[in-house]
Image: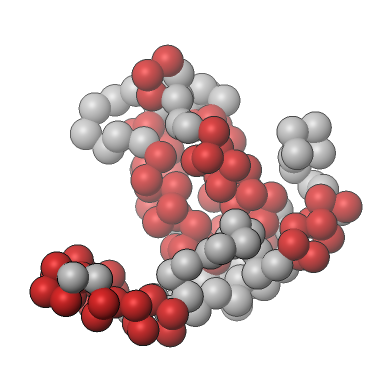
Amino acid sequence: MFDRQARNSLAEAARHYLTGLSSNFEFDDRMFRIRSRDLAVPAIRSQFWLIYDDLRKHKHEKEWRISDQQREIVLRAILFLKSDIEYTWPVIPAWYLAIRPFIWVLTLGYGVCALDRKYELQDPANVWPFRHRGEINAAKNRPRYLAAVV
């Protein structure tokens, strides 16, 4: 279910954090207040959660700046949030994410291969949250938010 308001709120929260307008705590509060049945919202929120320290207050500057690789993913996620493209990656069950490290250790990595393929945890084309380059190009050709950045 596509939810324009939730997507806009999440994109705006990320933009405010990345530009230094809000702290990590404000970003965290804004993100986790967003309620939506749009599958893109929790998936992207879980990736955004990885770009800041949630224990010490800081802004996105100096040693707290994200890497170039993280920045690319975040900008792509914001571009996705501002597009009209439906999120079609499979939903990964919480139970799998919780026990995946144990399965990996017990089977030396072999046990997770089939499940990772099933839940498409790998993104070899580096297009997530889009599904293919064509969707990225379509979003870039109709930018709503990042026209000057992308």
